[in-house]
Length: 437
Image (cartoon, rainbow, N blue to C red; front, side, top):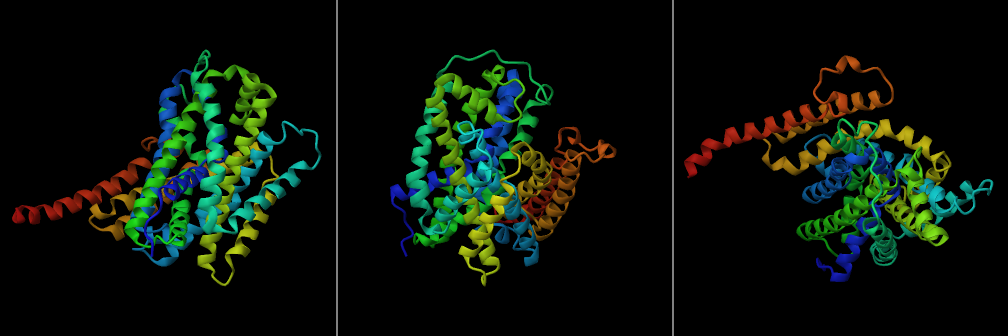
Protein backbone atom coordinates (compact mmCIF):
# COMPACT_ATOMS: atom_id res chain seq x y z
CA UNK A 1 0.00 0.00 0.00
CA UNK A 2 1.60 3.26 -1.15
CA UNK A 3 -1.02 5.93 -0.30
CA UNK A 4 1.34 8.58 -1.65
CA UNK A 5 1.86 9.99 -5.13
CA UNK A 6 5.03 11.56 -6.38
CA UNK A 7 4.87 15.24 -7.34
CA UNK A 8 4.98 14.23 -11.01
CA UNK A 9 2.06 11.82 -10.52
CA UNK A 10 0.10 14.45 -8.57
CA UNK A 11 0.57 16.96 -11.36
CA UNK A 12 -0.27 14.30 -13.93
CA UNK A 13 -3.47 13.52 -12.03
CA UNK A 14 -4.48 17.20 -12.08
CA UNK A 15 -3.64 17.56 -15.78
CA UNK A 16 -5.56 14.39 -16.59
CA UNK A 17 -8.63 15.72 -14.72
CA UNK A 18 -8.38 19.04 -16.59
CA UNK A 19 -8.09 17.22 -19.92
CA UNK A 20 -11.10 15.02 -19.17
CA UNK A 21 -13.25 18.10 -18.58
CA UNK A 22 -11.88 20.20 -21.45
CA UNK A 23 -13.83 18.81 -24.37
CA UNK A 24 -16.23 19.82 -27.09
CA UNK A 25 -18.71 21.96 -25.14
CA UNK A 26 -15.95 23.74 -23.27
CA UNK A 27 -14.59 25.11 -26.54
CA UNK A 28 -17.66 25.80 -28.69
CA UNK A 29 -20.02 27.43 -26.16
CA UNK A 30 -17.94 30.21 -24.49
CA UNK A 31 -17.16 32.15 -27.72
CA UNK A 32 -20.83 32.15 -28.76
CA UNK A 33 -21.95 33.21 -25.29
CA UNK A 34 -19.34 35.98 -25.33
CA UNK A 35 -20.60 37.20 -28.71
CA UNK A 36 -24.24 37.29 -27.51
CA UNK A 37 -23.30 38.92 -24.19
CA UNK A 38 -21.34 41.76 -25.81
CA UNK A 39 -21.19 44.67 -23.37
CA UNK A 40 -22.51 42.40 -20.61
CA UNK A 41 -19.64 39.95 -21.05
CA UNK A 42 -18.39 40.18 -17.44
CA UNK A 43 -21.60 39.17 -15.58
CA UNK A 44 -22.40 36.61 -18.29
CA UNK A 45 -18.93 35.10 -17.95
CA UNK A 46 -19.27 34.95 -14.15
CA UNK A 47 -22.56 33.09 -14.52
CA UNK A 48 -20.98 30.67 -16.98
CA UNK A 49 -18.00 30.11 -14.66
CA UNK A 50 -20.39 29.30 -11.80
CA UNK A 51 -21.88 26.28 -13.58
CA UNK A 52 -18.94 25.34 -15.81
CA UNK A 53 -16.17 25.64 -13.17
CA UNK A 54 -17.72 26.10 -9.72
CA UNK A 55 -20.21 23.24 -9.93
CA UNK A 56 -17.73 20.67 -11.33
CA UNK A 57 -15.32 21.67 -8.56
CA UNK A 58 -18.06 21.14 -5.96
CA UNK A 59 -19.03 17.91 -7.71
CA UNK A 60 -15.53 16.48 -7.30
CA UNK A 61 -15.49 17.67 -3.67
CA UNK A 62 -18.83 15.91 -3.11
CA UNK A 63 -17.55 12.66 -4.62
CA UNK A 64 -14.41 12.92 -2.49
CA UNK A 65 -16.43 13.52 0.68
CA UNK A 66 -18.89 10.69 -0.08
CA UNK A 67 -16.06 8.32 -0.98
CA UNK A 68 -17.65 7.53 -4.32
CA UNK A 69 -20.21 8.61 -6.89
CA UNK A 70 -23.99 8.47 -6.98
CA UNK A 71 -24.32 5.05 -5.26
CA UNK A 72 -22.47 6.46 -2.23
CA UNK A 73 -24.25 9.82 -2.37
CA UNK A 74 -27.67 8.12 -2.32
CA UNK A 75 -26.72 5.43 0.22
CA UNK A 76 -29.51 6.39 2.69
CA UNK A 77 -32.06 5.28 0.05
CA UNK A 78 -32.77 1.95 -1.61
CA UNK A 79 -29.95 0.80 -3.90
CA UNK A 80 -32.13 0.99 -7.02
CA UNK A 81 -32.44 4.79 -6.66
CA UNK A 82 -28.69 5.23 -7.08
CA UNK A 83 -28.65 2.77 -9.96
CA UNK A 84 -31.43 4.58 -11.85
CA UNK A 85 -29.80 7.99 -11.38
CA UNK A 86 -26.37 6.65 -12.31
CA UNK A 87 -27.57 4.90 -15.46
CA UNK A 88 -29.44 8.03 -16.58
CA UNK A 89 -26.49 10.38 -16.01
CA UNK A 90 -23.89 7.99 -17.44
CA UNK A 91 -25.99 7.45 -20.55
CA UNK A 92 -26.51 11.20 -21.09
CA UNK A 93 -22.92 12.18 -20.42
CA UNK A 94 -21.53 9.16 -22.23
CA UNK A 95 -22.72 7.52 -25.46
CA UNK A 96 -25.95 9.50 -25.88
CA UNK A 97 -24.71 13.11 -26.07
CA UNK A 98 -21.37 14.21 -24.63
CA UNK A 99 -19.01 11.55 -26.00
CA UNK A 100 -20.33 11.64 -29.61
CA UNK A 101 -20.20 15.44 -29.48
CA UNK A 102 -16.43 15.29 -28.97
CA UNK A 103 -15.95 13.63 -32.36
CA UNK A 104 -18.44 15.98 -34.03
CA UNK A 105 -16.61 19.07 -32.82
CA UNK A 106 -13.20 17.61 -33.64
CA UNK A 107 -14.43 16.80 -37.15
CA UNK A 108 -16.06 20.17 -37.87
CA UNK A 109 -13.25 22.30 -36.44
CA UNK A 110 -10.17 20.13 -36.67
CA UNK A 111 -10.65 18.26 -39.93
CA UNK A 112 -13.41 19.64 -42.16
CA UNK A 113 -11.77 23.06 -42.80
CA UNK A 114 -8.99 21.24 -44.64
CA UNK A 115 -11.03 18.50 -46.33
CA UNK A 116 -14.46 20.02 -46.78
CA UNK A 117 -15.27 18.17 -50.02
CA UNK A 118 -14.39 14.66 -48.85
CA UNK A 119 -17.63 12.66 -49.23
CA UNK A 120 -18.32 10.23 -46.40
CA UNK A 121 -15.35 11.51 -44.45
CA UNK A 122 -17.38 12.11 -41.28
CA UNK A 123 -18.06 8.38 -40.91
CA UNK A 124 -14.40 7.51 -41.45
CA UNK A 125 -13.20 10.28 -39.15
CA UNK A 126 -15.51 9.28 -36.27
CA UNK A 127 -14.45 5.64 -36.66
CA UNK A 128 -10.75 6.56 -36.49
CA UNK A 129 -11.33 9.05 -33.67
CA UNK A 130 -13.10 6.54 -31.44
CA UNK A 131 -10.66 3.79 -32.36
CA UNK A 132 -7.86 5.89 -30.87
CA UNK A 133 -10.03 6.78 -27.85
CA UNK A 134 -10.83 3.09 -27.39
CA UNK A 135 -7.17 2.09 -27.54
CA UNK A 136 -6.38 4.54 -24.71
CA UNK A 137 -9.51 3.73 -22.66
CA UNK A 138 -8.73 -0.01 -22.68
CA UNK A 139 -5.95 0.61 -20.16
CA UNK A 140 -7.51 2.76 -17.40
CA UNK A 141 -4.57 2.20 -15.07
CA UNK A 142 -2.31 4.04 -17.52
CA UNK A 143 -4.59 7.04 -18.16
CA UNK A 144 -2.66 9.23 -15.71
CA UNK A 145 0.48 8.58 -17.72
CA UNK A 146 -0.91 8.63 -21.28
CA UNK A 147 -3.34 11.53 -20.82
CA UNK A 148 -1.99 13.42 -17.81
CA UNK A 149 1.72 13.34 -18.61
CA UNK A 150 1.81 13.20 -22.43
CA UNK A 151 -1.30 14.54 -24.16
CA UNK A 152 -2.32 17.26 -21.70
CA UNK A 153 1.03 19.14 -21.51
CA UNK A 154 0.96 19.40 -25.30
CA UNK A 155 -2.65 20.60 -25.16
CA UNK A 156 -1.77 23.22 -22.52
CA UNK A 157 1.07 24.62 -24.64
CA UNK A 158 -1.29 25.04 -27.59
CA UNK A 159 -3.99 26.62 -25.40
CA UNK A 160 -1.55 29.07 -23.82
CA UNK A 161 -0.51 30.23 -27.29
CA UNK A 162 -4.12 30.85 -28.26
CA UNK A 163 -5.06 32.50 -24.95
CA UNK A 164 -2.10 34.89 -25.08
CA UNK A 165 -3.17 36.25 -28.47
CA UNK A 166 -6.70 36.84 -27.18
CA UNK A 167 -5.86 38.49 -23.86
CA UNK A 168 -2.89 40.53 -25.15
CA UNK A 169 -4.40 41.53 -28.49
CA UNK A 170 -6.41 44.64 -29.30
CA UNK A 171 -9.97 44.59 -27.99
CA UNK A 172 -12.72 45.07 -30.55
CA UNK A 173 -15.96 47.01 -30.15
CA UNK A 174 -18.37 45.23 -27.83
CA UNK A 175 -21.86 44.82 -29.26
CA UNK A 176 -25.14 45.30 -27.44
CA UNK A 177 -26.17 42.12 -25.60
CA UNK A 178 -28.85 39.90 -27.16
CA UNK A 179 -30.78 36.64 -26.51
CA UNK A 180 -31.40 37.08 -22.78
CA UNK A 181 -28.05 38.66 -21.98
CA UNK A 182 -29.54 42.16 -22.10
CA UNK A 183 -31.93 41.59 -19.16
CA UNK A 184 -30.30 38.82 -17.09
CA UNK A 185 -26.70 38.27 -18.22
CA UNK A 186 -25.55 36.36 -15.12
CA UNK A 187 -28.52 33.94 -15.13
CA UNK A 188 -28.29 33.44 -18.89
CA UNK A 189 -24.58 32.68 -18.60
CA UNK A 190 -25.34 30.35 -15.68
CA UNK A 191 -27.78 28.31 -17.78
CA UNK A 192 -25.45 28.41 -20.80
CA UNK A 193 -22.87 26.70 -18.61
CA UNK A 194 -25.15 23.64 -18.49
CA UNK A 195 -24.08 22.88 -22.05
CA UNK A 196 -20.57 21.93 -20.98
CA UNK A 197 -22.15 19.04 -19.01
CA UNK A 198 -19.27 19.29 -16.55
CA UNK A 199 -21.37 19.21 -13.36
CA UNK A 200 -22.74 15.85 -14.53
CA UNK A 201 -19.31 14.74 -15.68
CA UNK A 202 -17.71 15.64 -12.33
CA UNK A 203 -19.63 12.83 -10.61
CA UNK A 204 -18.46 10.36 -13.26
CA UNK A 205 -14.87 11.53 -13.34
CA UNK A 206 -14.68 11.60 -9.55
CA UNK A 207 -15.46 7.88 -9.45
CA UNK A 208 -12.97 7.21 -12.26
CA UNK A 209 -10.21 9.17 -10.50
CA UNK A 210 -10.75 7.24 -7.28
CA UNK A 211 -10.47 4.00 -9.27
CA UNK A 212 -7.25 5.23 -10.92
CA UNK A 213 -5.82 6.17 -7.52
CA UNK A 214 -6.56 2.67 -6.26
CA UNK A 215 -4.70 1.22 -9.24
CA UNK A 216 -1.77 3.47 -8.30
CA UNK A 217 -1.76 2.02 -4.77
CA UNK A 218 -3.60 4.88 -3.03
CA UNK A 219 -6.23 2.98 -1.05
CA UNK A 220 -6.71 5.03 2.14
CA UNK A 221 -9.92 7.14 1.86
CA UNK A 222 -8.18 10.16 3.42
CA UNK A 223 -5.40 10.03 0.82
CA UNK A 224 -7.92 9.59 -2.02
CA UNK A 225 -9.86 12.61 -0.74
CA UNK A 226 -6.69 14.73 -0.58
CA UNK A 227 -5.52 13.88 -4.09
CA UNK A 228 -8.99 14.25 -5.59
CA UNK A 229 -9.27 17.74 -4.10
CA UNK A 230 -5.84 18.68 -5.50
CA UNK A 231 -6.82 17.37 -8.95
CA UNK A 232 -10.12 19.29 -8.77
CA UNK A 233 -8.40 22.59 -7.99
CA UNK A 234 -5.86 22.15 -10.83
CA UNK A 235 -8.66 21.33 -13.28
CA UNK A 236 -10.79 24.29 -12.11
CA UNK A 237 -7.95 26.78 -12.54
CA UNK A 238 -7.21 25.48 -16.03
CA UNK A 239 -10.85 25.55 -17.11
CA UNK A 240 -11.36 29.07 -15.78
CA UNK A 241 -8.35 30.34 -17.77
CA UNK A 242 -9.66 28.75 -20.97
CA UNK A 243 -13.22 30.06 -20.52
CA UNK A 244 -12.15 33.61 -19.77
CA UNK A 245 -10.01 33.84 -22.92
CA UNK A 246 -12.71 32.24 -25.10
CA UNK A 247 -15.44 34.53 -23.70
CA UNK A 248 -13.42 37.64 -24.53
CA UNK A 249 -12.55 36.18 -27.93
CA UNK A 250 -16.25 35.92 -28.77
CA UNK A 251 -17.15 39.32 -27.33
CA UNK A 252 -14.33 41.18 -29.09
CA UNK A 253 -14.68 39.48 -32.48
CA UNK A 254 -18.43 39.29 -33.02
CA UNK A 255 -18.11 40.96 -36.41
CA UNK A 256 -16.14 38.04 -37.84
CA UNK A 257 -19.15 35.70 -37.96
CA UNK A 258 -22.24 37.77 -37.01
CA UNK A 259 -24.66 34.90 -37.80
CA UNK A 260 -22.63 32.14 -36.08
CA UNK A 261 -24.65 29.12 -34.94
CA UNK A 262 -21.95 27.83 -32.59
CA UNK A 263 -18.74 29.16 -31.07
CA UNK A 264 -16.59 26.95 -33.24
CA UNK A 265 -17.23 29.16 -36.26
CA UNK A 266 -16.12 32.27 -34.33
CA UNK A 267 -13.00 30.52 -33.05
CA UNK A 268 -12.05 29.28 -36.52
CA UNK A 269 -12.57 32.70 -38.09
CA UNK A 270 -10.48 34.40 -35.40
CA UNK A 271 -7.57 31.99 -35.74
CA UNK A 272 -7.67 32.18 -39.53
CA UNK A 273 -7.58 35.99 -39.37
CA UNK A 274 -4.74 36.12 -36.83
CA UNK A 275 -2.49 33.29 -37.98
CA UNK A 276 -3.65 32.05 -41.36
CA UNK A 277 -3.01 28.40 -42.25
CA UNK A 278 -0.49 27.90 -39.44
CA UNK A 279 -3.02 29.07 -36.86
CA UNK A 280 -5.71 26.84 -38.32
CA UNK A 281 -3.38 23.85 -37.99
CA UNK A 282 -2.64 24.76 -34.35
CA UNK A 283 -6.37 25.13 -33.67
CA UNK A 284 -7.01 21.75 -35.28
CA UNK A 285 -4.45 20.27 -32.90
CA UNK A 286 -6.03 21.95 -29.85
CA UNK A 287 -9.54 20.85 -30.79
CA UNK A 288 -8.55 17.29 -31.63
CA UNK A 289 -6.51 16.76 -28.46
CA UNK A 290 -9.12 18.37 -26.20
CA UNK A 291 -11.94 16.30 -27.66
CA UNK A 292 -9.90 13.10 -27.72
CA UNK A 293 -8.87 13.29 -24.05
CA UNK A 294 -12.47 13.96 -23.02
CA UNK A 295 -13.74 11.07 -25.14
CA UNK A 296 -11.21 8.77 -23.45
CA UNK A 297 -12.38 9.89 -20.00
CA UNK A 298 -16.08 9.54 -20.85
CA UNK A 299 -15.76 6.10 -22.43
CA UNK A 300 -13.56 4.86 -19.60
CA UNK A 301 -15.84 6.23 -16.85
CA UNK A 302 -19.01 4.83 -18.45
CA UNK A 303 -17.45 1.44 -19.09
CA UNK A 304 -16.06 1.26 -15.57
CA UNK A 305 -19.47 1.97 -14.05
CA UNK A 306 -21.44 -0.41 -16.25
CA UNK A 307 -18.83 -3.12 -15.61
CA UNK A 308 -19.35 -2.65 -11.85
CA UNK A 309 -23.11 -2.90 -12.42
CA UNK A 310 -22.85 -5.97 -14.68
CA UNK A 311 -19.57 -7.68 -13.77
CA UNK A 312 -20.28 -10.63 -16.07
CA UNK A 313 -19.69 -8.28 -18.99
CA UNK A 314 -16.05 -7.24 -19.08
CA UNK A 315 -14.80 -3.67 -18.93
CA UNK A 316 -13.22 -4.13 -22.37
CA UNK A 317 -16.57 -5.23 -23.85
CA UNK A 318 -18.26 -2.10 -22.52
CA UNK A 319 -15.46 0.07 -23.96
CA UNK A 320 -16.08 -1.37 -27.44
CA UNK A 321 -19.87 -1.13 -27.06
CA UNK A 322 -19.73 2.51 -25.94
CA UNK A 323 -17.39 3.35 -28.82
CA UNK A 324 -19.73 1.77 -31.39
CA UNK A 325 -22.75 3.74 -30.09
CA UNK A 326 -20.66 6.93 -30.12
CA UNK A 327 -19.64 6.37 -33.76
CA UNK A 328 -23.29 5.99 -34.77
CA UNK A 329 -24.49 9.16 -33.01
CA UNK A 330 -21.41 11.16 -34.01
CA UNK A 331 -22.62 11.19 -37.61
CA UNK A 332 -25.46 13.58 -36.84
CA UNK A 333 -25.19 17.30 -37.56
CA UNK A 334 -23.52 19.21 -34.70
CA UNK A 335 -26.19 21.93 -34.45
CA UNK A 336 -28.92 19.25 -34.47
CA UNK A 337 -27.22 17.28 -31.69
CA UNK A 338 -26.84 20.44 -29.59
CA UNK A 339 -30.52 21.27 -30.14
CA UNK A 340 -31.61 17.80 -29.05
CA UNK A 341 -29.36 17.81 -26.00
CA UNK A 342 -30.42 21.13 -24.45
CA UNK A 343 -33.84 20.00 -23.06
CA UNK A 344 -32.22 16.86 -21.61
CA UNK A 345 -29.48 18.89 -19.93
CA UNK A 346 -31.88 21.51 -18.55
CA UNK A 347 -33.97 18.69 -17.05
CA UNK A 348 -30.95 16.84 -15.61
CA UNK A 349 -28.96 19.68 -14.10
CA UNK A 350 -31.30 20.50 -11.16
CA UNK A 351 -31.03 16.85 -10.04
CA UNK A 352 -27.23 16.84 -10.27
CA UNK A 353 -26.88 20.21 -8.53
CA UNK A 354 -29.27 19.21 -5.74
CA UNK A 355 -27.39 15.93 -5.20
CA UNK A 356 -24.02 17.70 -5.07
CA UNK A 357 -25.27 20.30 -2.56
CA UNK A 358 -26.91 17.57 -0.44
CA UNK A 359 -23.67 15.56 -0.31
CA UNK A 360 -21.67 18.61 0.78
CA UNK A 361 -24.03 19.62 3.61
CA UNK A 362 -25.20 16.13 4.63
CA UNK A 363 -23.50 16.33 8.02
CA UNK A 364 -25.50 19.45 8.91
CA UNK A 365 -28.96 18.06 8.11
CA UNK A 366 -31.56 17.04 10.69
CA UNK A 367 -32.85 14.01 8.78
CA UNK A 368 -30.51 13.18 5.86
CA UNK A 369 -32.72 10.31 4.70
CA UNK A 370 -35.94 12.34 4.43
CA UNK A 371 -34.09 15.39 3.13
CA UNK A 372 -32.53 13.35 0.31
CA UNK A 373 -35.93 11.98 -0.70
CA UNK A 374 -37.42 15.48 -0.73
CA UNK A 375 -34.46 16.94 -2.64
CA UNK A 376 -34.60 14.26 -5.35
CA UNK A 377 -38.39 14.47 -5.75
CA UNK A 378 -38.40 18.28 -5.95
CA UNK A 379 -35.40 18.51 -8.31
CA UNK A 380 -36.82 15.80 -10.60
CA UNK A 381 -40.22 17.51 -10.84
CA UNK A 382 -38.80 20.96 -11.47
CA UNK A 383 -36.16 19.58 -13.83
CA UNK A 384 -38.95 18.03 -15.88
CA UNK A 385 -40.79 21.37 -15.93
CA UNK A 386 -37.70 23.30 -17.09
CA UNK A 387 -36.77 20.69 -19.70
CA UNK A 388 -40.31 20.63 -21.07
CA UNK A 389 -40.37 24.42 -21.31
CA UNK A 390 -37.13 24.48 -23.31
CA UNK A 391 -38.50 21.71 -25.57
CA UNK A 392 -41.44 23.96 -26.46
CA UNK A 393 -44.16 22.56 -24.18
CA UNK A 394 -46.60 25.20 -22.92
CA UNK A 395 -45.76 25.84 -19.27
CA UNK A 396 -46.93 29.42 -18.78
CA UNK A 397 -49.45 28.27 -16.16
CA UNK A 398 -46.47 27.90 -13.82
CA UNK A 399 -45.22 31.44 -14.43
CA UNK A 400 -46.08 32.41 -10.84
CA UNK A 401 -43.10 30.40 -9.57
CA UNK A 402 -40.02 32.43 -8.53
CA UNK A 403 -37.32 32.58 -11.23
CA UNK A 404 -39.55 30.65 -13.66
CA UNK A 405 -39.03 33.25 -16.38
CA UNK A 406 -35.24 32.74 -16.32
CA UNK A 407 -35.30 28.94 -16.26
CA UNK A 408 -34.41 28.50 -12.59
CA UNK A 409 -37.71 27.71 -10.89
CA UNK A 410 -36.00 24.79 -9.15
CA UNK A 411 -33.71 27.02 -7.04
CA UNK A 412 -36.21 28.19 -4.42
CA UNK A 413 -37.85 24.84 -3.54
CA UNK A 414 -34.50 23.03 -3.27
CA UNK A 415 -33.06 25.84 -1.15
CA UNK A 416 -36.14 25.73 1.11
CA UNK A 417 -35.88 21.94 1.61
CA UNK A 418 -32.17 21.98 2.48
CA UNK A 419 -32.35 25.16 4.59
CA UNK A 420 -35.31 23.81 6.57
CA UNK A 421 -33.42 20.60 7.39
CA UNK A 422 -30.35 22.58 8.50
CA UNK A 423 -32.40 24.89 10.73
CA UNK A 424 -34.27 21.97 12.29
CA UNK A 425 -30.98 20.32 13.22
CA UNK A 426 -29.63 23.56 14.67
CA UNK A 427 -32.80 23.99 16.72
CA UNK A 428 -32.60 20.41 18.02
CA UNK A 429 -28.93 20.49 19.05
CA UNK A 430 -28.82 24.02 20.48
CA UNK A 431 -30.07 23.04 23.99
CA UNK A 432 -27.46 20.26 24.19
CA UNK A 433 -24.76 22.69 23.17
CA UNK A 434 -25.81 25.10 25.91
CA UNK A 435 -25.73 22.39 28.62
CA UNK A 436 -22.23 21.30 27.58
CA UNK A 437 -21.03 24.85 27.70
